[in-house]
Image (cartoon, rainbow, N blue to C red; front, side, top):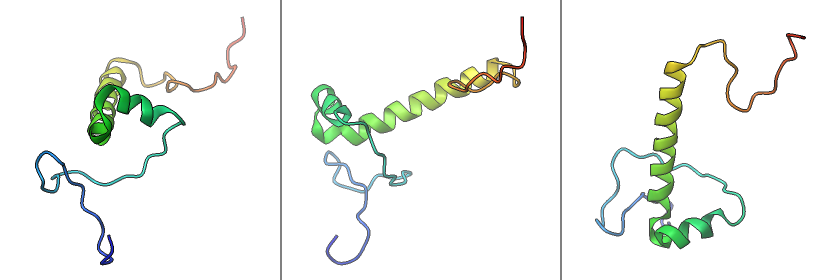
Length: 84
């Protein structure tokens, strides 16, 4: 903002600051914002990202709760420990 104060997260529908959210800069791959806009509309991009992140966190937390702790995280490279 021009007065040096940080910009508050607001919702165009409600016209007031969102409660319980922390502004976070996220860099998205090229083309992803346009894909979101095509599905949800440009003014709903932040809401879509919030919902997607919360949904993925819940999915991963549930998965972690049901899998053994010695299993490497998704995307981890194998260590090559066992040979056949």
